[in-house]
Image (cartoon, rainbow, N blue to C red):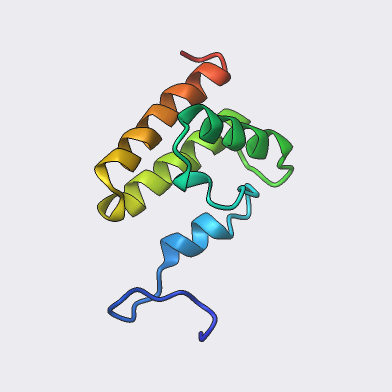
Length: 99
């Protein structure tokens, strides 16, 4: 277990492992730290469309990963970054023609 990331209290950070090592999507490094919602959405869209391991539509896979990250990392996100990621959801809907 030495190679797993751990939180300050020593517990394993399973949500970080899921985000970084998703079997469904290969995410660009740092995608959830970017400041441009359109760029985040475009990256997630590319990753979802390129994946041959996802179990649902590209839209659902991309939105699920974004929502998962916001929900699991939400308590550690700054208010500004949380707003950016929420706007990225709107951008993702637009880019998939679902707005």
